[in-house]
Length: 312
Image (cartoon, rainbow, N blue to C red):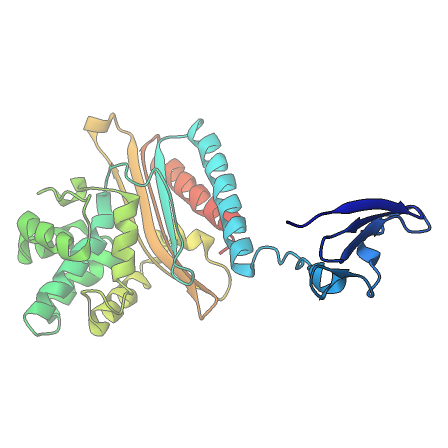
């Protein structure tokens, strides 16, 4: 059994171990702790130098750049949610979702709340037409494109009804939705009364660009061309957040019914892109607006808030 002796030498505490080794701990001449200044000639135990015994703790490395970026994104999301809640208190009901395809990050506010699609369903009908033609191994016919162009570019209702019927109506579009991943969208025979969520609309927008999705390259190109060339009178909504030099696609929807007391549903879906710098999908849905213009003002304000706080 080892024995220990403790003595006091010149203001220093000396511990003598049974093996003859010493542990020296005391005060420096200036009164500071002298444990770190152990003379190299003293040993602890069997030939272990005091310098080796005093392990040096590594300096903390801190959070990684990825961790810092994630924390900053979470902070921005919280700030955006707070602003949207303030707006909710003084405006008609709305929902918004954003997906940054560069980072893969998705944000949603009331993402699963259902709204009437109004004319944004026309983008969905377009996707289903393109899939139907793919399945048949053919390009869209001239007759189909004669309907699809005014349906998207001018939001022509008669063309939409004809194309909706031509591709199989409610049943066919419902089956198509499953392929597109639209799990919360319920098709109505009166196509404008189809019910959807911003989460589903972001999924749809993603399918228009997903190289691994059901739409092939030609179909994706056709959808982009049509949604990028809407009539100038209808380039409100998502295009309002596009900066100089950026490209946008859009499909808007607006509707008023006596069943809603004459109030308006106003919706916008689309993308904003610029080379490798920006690639973001945005969907804003709203209802109970007092007028079409006030609804446009609301969805544009919401879209602008997402860009302000999420910094895309």
